Length: 278
Ligand code: MG
Image 1 (cartoon, protein in one colour):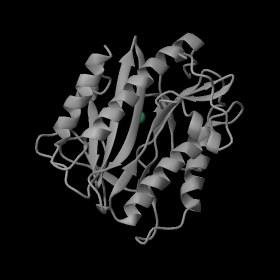
Image 2 (image 1 turned 45 degrees about the horizontal axis):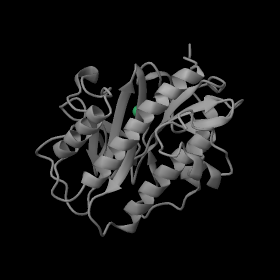
Image 3 (image 1 turned 90 degrees about the vertical axis):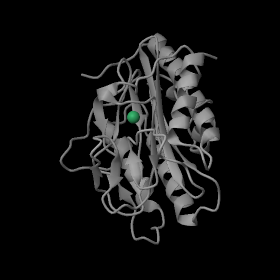
């Protein structure tokens, strides 16, 4: 059973999404050489408090922080730590969430720490981000869940291959329904699997977090002894981008983008739904 949201509920999710966007802006600025990932968590806590929002990450399955900070070969779920000091040349994915009046937002981005990153890292992040937007563009009335997976995978596979051989589309993690909880049905694969059907039809009120994770090598991952940190098996670096998206009668609304996805969707020939808070 999918949770179909009313307009009022989508407006609440938009509020939560804008808190997540504010966490992104603040942590992006703070992700500089010399900062620790714990510093970034403190920045996120402050933004949550300023907005009177709650964290959906803190305490989730025992997770000890308000954001995930995943550096270089860490794919997702990195735990902020005073021991992890960001260095010039690192890449970091920051995944953040917020709850407003019981409604959830969840989004992630990859940032470059310092400067002088290899072109293949810049391209890795670009391909991952653009594949997320290709997935968002497939959130339309009448499509099925598999159309989102197809759009994400299709985008990645159409790109020139990296010098390392092939992009790894991480297999063990994917997107998810979101709303009255952070993680809900349906699970969204970032690739098409013959083992799965076409999935549910997308209708107004359907909300989903779309989050491709891509490496410069393998699609396989393992979890460290801390039971959270997910690494690529071959330790190649990876990128992670995520937005929470609502489908409305008027098309998609990117809940966690400041402009609701307007500018980026326009580039793709799609009109974003009007902002319910505007
Ligand atoms: Mg998520």
